[in-house]
Image (cartoon, rainbow, N blue to C red; front, top):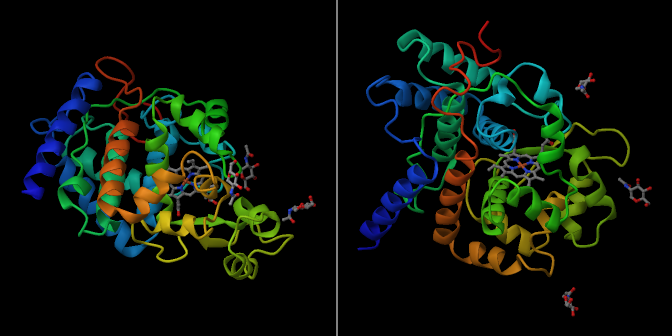
Length: 319
Ligand code: HEM
Ligand SMILES: *[C@@H]1O[C@H](CO)[C@@H](O)[C@H](O)[C@H]1NC(C)=O
Ligand SMILES: *[C@@H]1O[C@H](CO)[C@@H](O)[C@H](O)[C@H]1NC(C)=O
Ligand SMILES: *[C@@H]1O[C@H](CO)[C@@H](O)[C@H](O)[C@H]1NC(C)=O
């Protein structure tokens, strides 16, 4: 009963997403490149098994693509957005996408966009790291496809539109609402911070100066993140498990163990506290909200039809 009800809501969700996004459709490559999705999936699985952090890095890459002129692979172009403050020295996974693209070009020339490869890679990354006991059908997320690639990128927009680790709760809400996402989407997507790592420079002020942080947690982080220097040393975003996507993120926030300032503001005696409590106590509610929000994020301003191009190589526009 429960399984078929959630399957039904997934079908409705996918149908809704297709309507909202115009001609994007989960079956977009079913005839033009039948092996596209399997090729992306095996590329992601191989990359994640040799580097467990890669799932996190690919998920973040998709977010940073979508928030800057839509999900159009602008972030994959060499230089440009990659030099923006939230990206430089911190985004990872370009090589994985480039190598999947090379494999796909060999089977279907100039057919599958880099924007779609990145969208599917982010989805497959979530599948690779999810806790399967949630609801596998929801976690699998049939993502709408048919995006085309940009012929440009926008470093200034990457600096202005991506939220940063010192953002306040209202900054975060604004950054997401500017992209058509709700506060509940923002809280759910922040749950991505249950995987991957952050550099000391992004949380230093928090562990030395903030008061809404668990003392033992702060002390243990200081060992590898000195007051001066060491800005590049890494800490897991989720203190409990680094490579599993689950709702522990929200339980951590409730015990003042959010790593970034922008994490802890979601549970700081304020308007998003109840959503955090709900996701902490109800894994299915988190899983469902995360899936919905991922699809919404993937549908931000896609280029379709005759807009943009299908790049031959993800790191540069066609000559
Ligand atoms: C809510 C606003 C957000 C802020 C302020 C934020 C900020 C950050 C920062 C500062 C880092 C560490 C980067 C570094 O030190 O190299 C990070 C890592 C990460 N972020 Fe976010 N983020 C946000 C939302 C998201 C969203 C929506 C997603 C995806 C759905 C996401 C996925 C990730 C992942 C997976 C990592 C770890 C990446 C890795 O290990 O390579 N973040 N984020
Ligand atoms: C990006 O980072 C590199 C290495 O840290 C640095 O040399 C370069 O100046 C940075 N680029 C920008 C635009 O800040
Ligand atoms: C903490 O606050 C002090 C006083 O405002 C400031 O000088 C320092 O740069 C802040 N950050 C760290 C990591 O100590
Ligand atoms: C939470 O906010 C309310 C209203 O602003 C205040 O009365 C209360 O003392 C705060 N509680 C904590 C634990 O900060």
